[in-house]
Length: 261
View 1 (cartoon, rainbow, N blue to C red):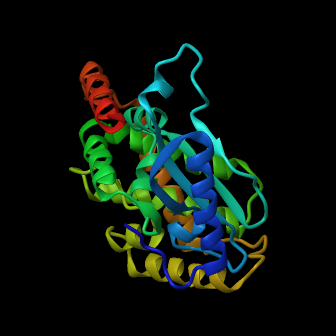
View 2 (view 1 turned 30 degrees about the horizontal axis):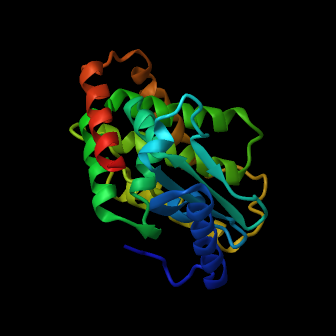
C-alpha cells in the first residue's frame, strides 16, 4: 500500500524511495513498513519541515541466529531535508511491549511510502493485546515533560500540545490504549472545547506558513489545557501493570517468529 499526499515534494519522495531500496539491498533486509513521522504526519508541518521517514525492517532468520547480532537500527545520511532511519522488528516488538508509543504511531501514520497492510495489521493487533494504558500514558507524559525542560518556543510547544492531546484522548476513551497519531484527529475525537480546537487550528495554520515560528508564547487557553492534562496524567506514574508479562513475552515471540518466517 502507498498513501503519499500530493502536497509532498515529488523529488524528495523519489529520493526517499531510492534510499529505502538501497537500505534493503545493502543490508539484506525487507522493509514491510515505511512511513512519514514528525510534524508532517503529526498534522502541523512548517514550510521548511524536513522529511522524517521511518521504517521497520525484517532480516532473514540467519540475521537473528548469531552470537554477534547486527545493530537493530539502520540509518542513512542526515541533512536539512532527509531524516531516514528504521528499526529492526525485534526492537519494535519489545518497545511496544514496554509501552513505548513511537512504533505504534509509525504503524498508524497517515503518510505511507510503502507498506504491507497485513504486516501492519498484525502488529497493531499485537499492540492492542499487550500494551498497558498506563504505560502509554507515561510515555506521552514523559515526552511532554522533556519538551518543557528545554528552551521554550512556539515550535517546541507543539511537542507538548500533541502529547497533552493524546492524554486527553486516553481519558476520553477508557477502553482504548492506542491514540491516533496526529494532533487534529486527537482533538476532534476528544471532549475539548471549541475554544481549544479553534486555538489549536489557528496555531497550526500559522505554523504552516511560517518558517521561523518565533519565541513567543502559545495562546493561554492551550497552555492551560496542556498543563491540566499533564497534571492529571501524573496518575499513570504509580499505576501497576495489569497484563501478565509472561504472556506478553510469549505473544511477542510468536509474532516475531511468524513475521520472520
